[in-house]
Length: 309
Image (tube, rainbow, N blue to C red; front, side, top):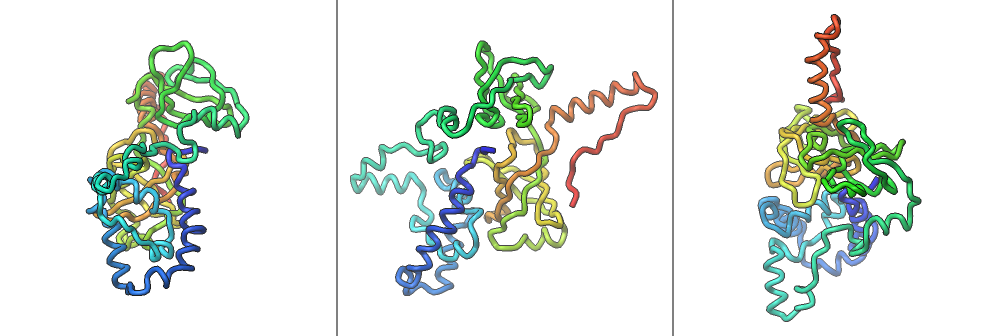
């Protein structure tokens, strides 16, 4: 499934197999006078979240390198250090590198470029027609060429409808895309997810998480989004449950949840499971209130998914 950060595994593969191989070959030639202590200081300075956070132009660094191994990071130098993009552009202007200044930044999938995303994907995947269905009343609103062309939270262009509808769920088995009528619809919001086995930059989980099996921190899953306060629950298999303090919009399977503690980027895990949406929970509460009137057995008890090892 295509997520919002498809360059994550791509970047990891390049750093691990291509750049790292070359760095090992040239290591002594490139760094003949750098001591281990000096390299550690440079690394710590370059990765300090106190430097990166709040400075536009550096928020994407951790989203590219949080899945790279410690072995690769030990051989990595960040030549721009703590410089922001604005300052680097100023240097380029002073050196008359106007072609660099005029080039727009890539905000999409790097290998797609300016091409239409749907047309690009359909060159490699066969269309799988399906239906757009309202999550509120199961009304069929239109058709599409494939559920894989959409990601949660994006606006669905439904022929014949002027009002905007937004993707809230996808049914790969049936090929249907479920949509809701508002960009802030509760079906788009969740506060619980489970990741794959987490890749910790320091090669092991934080001591507090190992000791208590739970830890407060922050996470994000999209480039430049605000950090979200959360609680991690460590499972025996190395995966974690992430409980957000406040429900967040458009979580999707296949994305990477990146974790932070204070000024440090801790690592990341791929999102493998999602908790119920706010809309599903609201419907459950509504049924619970109505059930006693129509049944002597009372409301059913559904614990739902939760942080369990």
